[in-house]
Length: 451
Picture 1 (cartoon, rainbow, N blue to C red):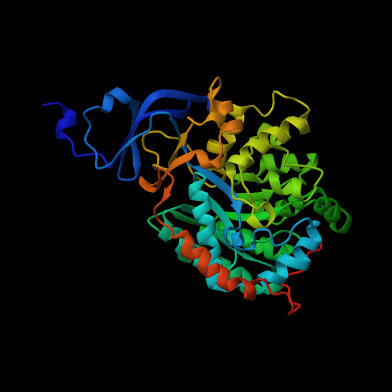
Picture 2 (cartoon, rainbow, N blue to C red):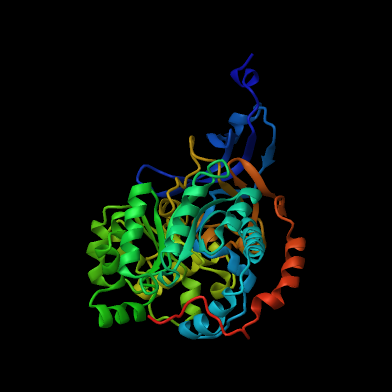
């Protein structure tokens, strides 16, 4: 009797696919005609398809013509803002916030947040996103959605200094209450909004709390060059210097956007004692006509991971990380005036290992790693023929080519069928609630934008 015949069945065996791999120098490669064995939510083995011919499993997937990738990670978004998709179009940043978004957000209820998060999670699962870093309000509702739909998430309750000490305390209470929830799929962060809405005293207090409780910090900083120039003019320091002097850079910090990071900021980021990462969401920068983008090359040169993101659907209109990957590659080529940067393999590195590091995960399909992976179909006419598999994935494949999405070994979508969220019911109820949600006649704002 063979060993395979005597062992207990695997939970899942995937056969016949190409598997994206990383070597010991973190270079991207592909193992053709492979198999992935999953047990207890963990990748047990990655081997040749022939090696699992007789292997018993509770569930099998024939993935011929598909590529297995580590699940994509949306490193910065505001999932509930899917409910506000398209509500504030063709506006400069200040008007976008003050005239539309912050008045509408003053109407938010917990149920609005929950429905928006459900819609966002459905979109992300269908696009091959297995984990997202979220920064918003009423985050208990988002945590419940994550627990129910099966995704993985880094969640933080956002706050402004205008809320007083209560805002910071609420962010801490949320982080401690939900840390490790959903069988470990939920991790948490403290979430001050930004240096221009959270004062130095609150940022310093946040840094102290983060160190005391072993929590990361997720915030917006140096979002654009205007913010950096305004900070220099008013305070004599850049937003990154504010993070340095308040101790935020001594924590594990995830910085959203960073298109306003300047050369003098780089030594501070390089010397930061915590795990520092930046999330780039290029589509929004194009929509707002910001003249700069995240300095990916400079950050990579100093060892700061840059993860891919979409921001919220109110600014980006989609939660498509595939688009973020392609745009990051193309915009970096243009910005650096160098077609050799960012290559397709480098873009995949940002989409996998660097995005995972940004949120404290592993990012590989390898034995011992959590089984968060997606299967991408490359048999369509827009992805054929395949001369360069990395280029096909980055520049030809689309979110709709994702066939199967798996988190912790659980199949959340199989053959494009979403298994954990009832989208028509979410859309129906959200439609009923929209008139009250989008009303701006009250004249309220949750905050004032002015850098």
